[in-house]
Length: 448
Image (cartoon, rainbow, N blue to C red; front, side, top):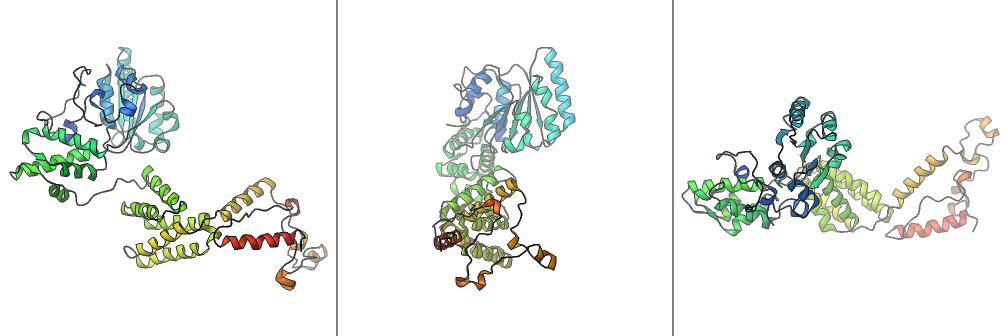
């Protein structure tokens, strides 16, 4: 499946948007209707509910969510092409509430004439809450059909009130095979593409471009246009793999430290550690770091993991991870990545126990439920004569003075009775702790 497909002779009329011949190749090759768009058939094909609605000029308000270059603007223009209404485009980077109000006022005027307005807001996640709220009443009453485009997870980036009035359509990055077809068509299209240059590219070169741009058709076409013009200018007829490598030596991974991909990689990292997969764990750790994340963020997550997920099954994990954190501060990159890798692999392979973490949660829940229960008198501090007379500290037995260094009694408030918060596993060194604790608890219950 490809993002760009040949036009169907039965397609509806093209939108009135004209593209200049000197516009970037991605704009010139942009699909003009949904019938030219086949890369997103799973969500926008003619057999899908939303695809049928758009083709029948019944498009609801939509939030288009997907990575750069997957076709969000293309889909917005295709909606306009299938609509008898006006198409108005705003950029959340350049526009504010004032521009939205002007667009809405024009839409209200057109609506009185029986004409719909499709209001496309690119990068809608960059609108703040007040700006997004300004759209609500006009979307709700149908003054405009809102089409918002965002690279961010709408659950985080778009107000819940806006989301409740729109359908979220998830668009995926193009697969390399699909993008190769896009590039090949652009090379041969003489009307809108690069066909007039007479430049070709071998399969290896096109595949390298497709994989380099991570499914981003806009970047792929931009790189192809640059290569084709360079090759044409040198009097050559074919772009090669070496040409691609020369133009794309500094590959930038698709990543946003504040966005969804950051949290996806962090989640994959922790789950790989938890799943005892050192290969995946070090891969995701370095994916974050190579993409620009602070290694200290990764190390902080590792320190938390060492206690929360490894815990008492291997208490050395916390020591080693803290040491790796200190070593990184001393060494800095790239040498500091070595102790980081050391700790990542250790954490992945260590036995796992959440018993300490679970005990903490259970205690906090109990405190929230029962409040400030009184401390047993024998455990209270008795720094004054009066306190001693009141019974503070009376009958307390110091374990260090008893045989075996242990007193067979419980220390929790009386209202909690035999409550146990810590439930050890039998994994790793915690197995020995569990056996020892079982003996102590049995004695504390009176089973000497």
